[in-house]
Length: 276
Image (cartoon, rainbow, N blue to C red):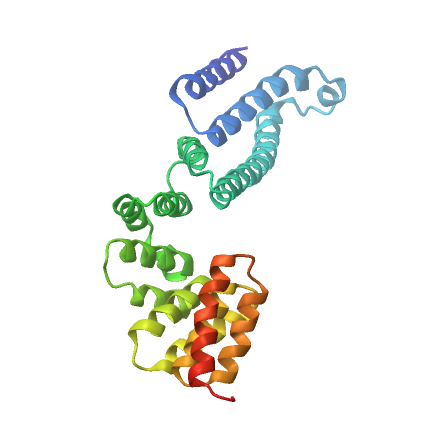
């Protein structure tokens, strides 16, 4: 009887600790399962006739302990898995809101996420992305700086995001782009941005060609990148390839303003390219 009272008190304390003190759900579940198993086993097992006949009653504490360990282990595994799924699902929803341009809603969801799971690298990064889209460079940099070095070392997106912040703050951002590409050679946005930077700022015209060609291999229908590549070919006096990519840029664009911009390049090709 004493063991039942003690286990019941522990169970009540466990529930109050979770409800009033926001104890971790994993710990709450484990303690709760142990207490419930102990209470049930203490009441039920001694009443089983077959156990009495086999004189197993003295071994009940060990039996209860083994059952509790098995149940707690299973409960912990299930809880961890469900917690992980919930985290991933919540972050996927936040990322989708960001992609849809619903930054205020994404920020509110992120507040809820951090309230439940605390801050982590993914949350800090996505908070920074929201601030970047909102044009808040200083706030974005603050959250990017919170991201761990371990995350930075493997995240091309982090370095690309920092390039955006540095550009907004009128600081050098080329190293950030190069680092992003070194981590992920197929980072489309970084390739396009670095290609455009080299197009206007690097005397070596072939650098812009290299980065923009790499980008086009990843996305062959982006009018802006196709136009930039046409421009790069004009810089090396390759009028034939310039016209080819200019034609593609016009083909994949629905903007009349963009097509008018392309007309200027066609004029340059006609004037300087001759019959090429």
